[in-house]
Image 1 (cartoon, rainbow, N blue to C red):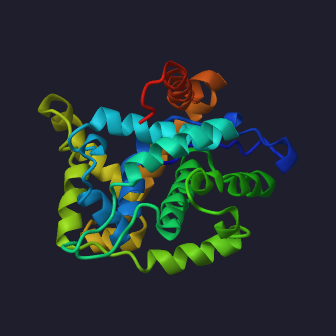
Image 2 (image 1 turned 45 degrees about the vertical axis):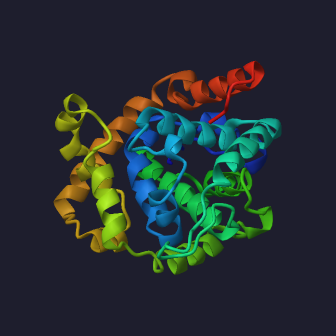
Length: 283
């Protein structure tokens, strides 16, 4: 999921980088579903979710709980302490023990596979960078490099070793191009994606007014390769409309106090720590 707000005027050297200055909840609204689609378009990840026996974590069955879990992971990975990350890693590992392929699965997968987790982390980073450019325009090189280096927490908060994170943005671009080309969408996963795009997890009063808009902007935030895989149409006019909308959102967001911009990530981080203190499940 995508959460960095960046100002053209602000320059930051890596030593001065404070993630709290760049967390923007508006990006989660726009980028969430597109990022899930990117992640699940790698077949082992997609089938790991589609066949998951952890029904309490299904967005189709428990959309609020699943959304909270995902937002909490992002807030812990990017804004938490090492102790927060260790606690949440343990909680996620408990759920991931049940996510693995069976003899009947069309592809082999295991939620502890660090290569699959690296792909998920890469999607989170790539989506963050793309959405924030649309919201706030390009950042200076020092700030862009600082966030890229910091983004390794998106993977290392689980099983991805630090050395697996590509050394720099050029290395990441090569990794991204190679692995995006490996993604594909078969009928089973496409049916799942259509439910996400059309907000089928929501009740009709919420779904009907927003589903068409949600499908439209999510389409715009997908790489062209995945639009083609899903048979989605996107025109130059659509691109211009989406960029105007997101730039307007970014202008409003950038004028808000940091505590408001950080919502809901600051709230989910507080909630995670409260749950830990009280002995409640973290996910």
